[in-house]
Length: 81
Image (cartoon, rainbow, N blue to C red; front, side):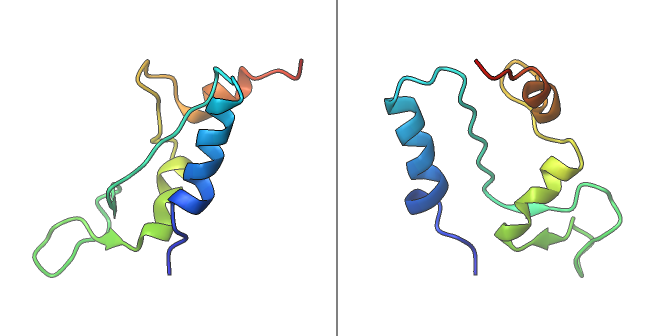
């Protein structure tokens, strides 16, 4: 079972934006497929994982915002005010 987006991450994102935070990023994937080329389905297409596995993209440093800044660069640039 995959956690429902809206009552969890979606609501949290909305609350942060409504509270005036300007440096908030949100990435949503329609599906999660193997990008390594190691795992394929019976037809030879990239294997599709269950939605919970969306962390794979982050783990493999494949997540970036519209400006091309990847997650780890963005996280490293954050500072406590």
